[in-house]
Amino acid sequence: MSSVPPLLDVILQRRSRERFDASRPLAVPHLVSLLEAAHLAPSSYNLQPWRFLWTVRGDPEFDRVLLALDPGNATWAASASALVVGGFTRVGREGRPNPWAEHDLGMATAQLVLQAVASGLGAHPMAGFDTGRLRTALSIPTGIEPMTVTAIGWPAEESLPARERVPLERVAVRGSWPPPEER
Amino acid sequence: MSSVPPLLDVILQRRSRERFDASRPLAVPHLVSLLEAAHLAPSSYNLQPWRFLWTVRGDPEFDRVLLALDPGNATWAASASALVVGGFTRVGREGRPNPWAEHDLGMATAQLVLQAVASGLGAHPMAGFDTGRLRTALSIPTGIEPMTVTAIGWPAEESLPARERVPLERVAVRGSWPPPEER
Image 1 (cartoon, each protein chain N blue to C red):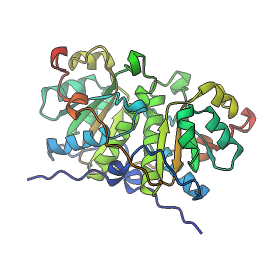
Image 2: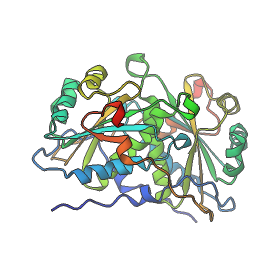
Image 3: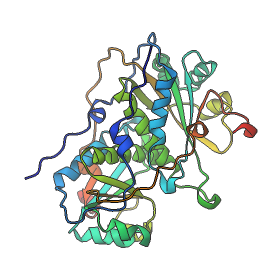
Image 4: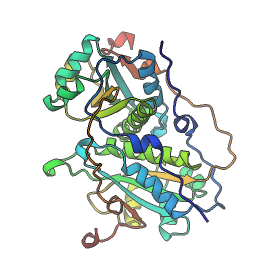
């Protein structure tokens, strides 16, 4: 007989929070430990294509990142303790483009987020920002493509909506993909 | 005074293993729980762009996936208990392309991998396979782009090399990116 091991607490507890306690400081070594967790992710041919630009409340760059966010994000992300820009380099093996760069940045970011949750923080990756403005504001060089900004902070009281996911059977199929009429 | 919380055990323990115990069966509900963990990942605008095609040893598709792998991968992946093709749909909001599809597949795959580690398994995402052959073998429809194949199995005795990572300071920078001569 076999029983299914429970899902990881950090996976179950992780939510994309939009309220943080801006008054509680986040120690820089704590933030750096999240980046260490990210950097331990696997990557295609171990290319480690992820590049992170991080900034904490009080840094001049913190406000510049806020200004590059879509207004809807900037409103709540202002209560975060840190903002981490997730980018990647496309340079792959033998100078060829690395098609897995975004994917592997995603793996690293997931580890960052789960490590945040494990240490009592909330981490919310965002896609809504102005890439050009962000690039200018942080002197992001050509060759590094910013993809996400992750807000990290101490969770504040917040009424979270129920999780919404399409049924697992629609995104995970055994064997071959069924014909369109059965999808 | 603040102390830095320890890194998650699953992050520290995760390695890209290349030896599995092929004789030990993996219960299907256990494998499905890894996909549940993946499906709980966050995604841009909650689009959940990941699509997984999974197969376990004994399924005819298992051997077909092996045949699509690069020979160097096929050799050791043959000892896995399951092979999970990770793909994505590019369809985004209002029918526009979703630029975060690969990234978000990566986040889901990282959760799958860490859930595997948490439950005693090893999971090794691979980039080395023939996409066309995989597409044909598994009837992967147009509109789903396969990016990875993850081998999942019970870890067998294996002498793992030391982890190799570039120094954290080269991939994670505070504030602005330094000028080229200091990078």
